[in-house]
Amino acid sequence: MSTPSGHRDHGPGDQGKPPEPSGVDLARVALRAAKEQARARGAAAQQKKQARRGGLRSGARADGRDPLPLGAAINRLITERGWETPAAVGGVMGRWPQMVGPEVALHCEPQKYDEDARVLTVQCDSTAWATQLRLLAPTLVARLNDDLGQGTVKTIKVLGPGGPARRYGPLRAPGSTGPGDTYG
Image (cartoon, rainbow, N blue to C red; front, side, top):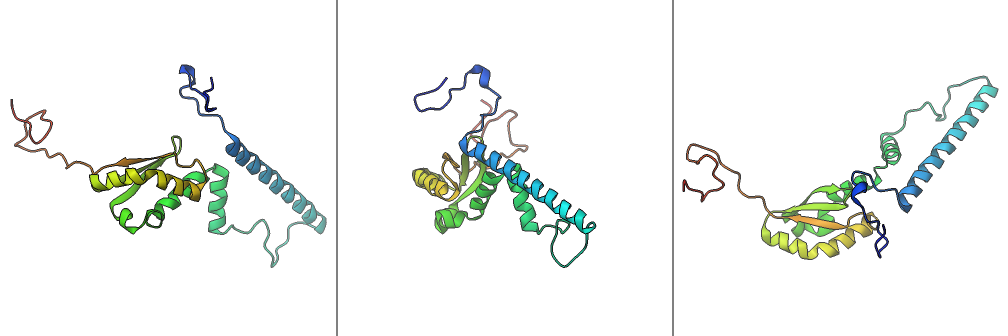
């Protein structure tokens, strides 16, 4: 069933099924397949040439037997596995101070990115900074999507500071829920 906005409404039978790939994802898959076919055709043509020349020869020029540079091998792995978005978001986490500014970065730190929900979770060191970041969230989402591609980040989930560590010891009542809990 479709909603007026064009999004598919997930019924009770759709739970657990991954969403079907959309335009950009289908284009990536098609591009990946075309590249692999071109690579295979090129390798076959190269083998025919070598067979005419009398087999594989060693020489000064690079050929298919040479090892790939590390950067090229990593880029190829990222492309083959479809990890472009998580890798780009990871790069943003590394450039967080440049994205939000040094003062905000000092008090707010990105924790994780949920690729399925497209949510970036950010932890702040005080409730004041959490409130400030919630106010800046729409601007920050727009800036992240400009850098990563539209729709990469839909929302930013802002977490406040964690509470103090729970202390267990001889002065705690069994089953107590907090520092103000008494025997009753």
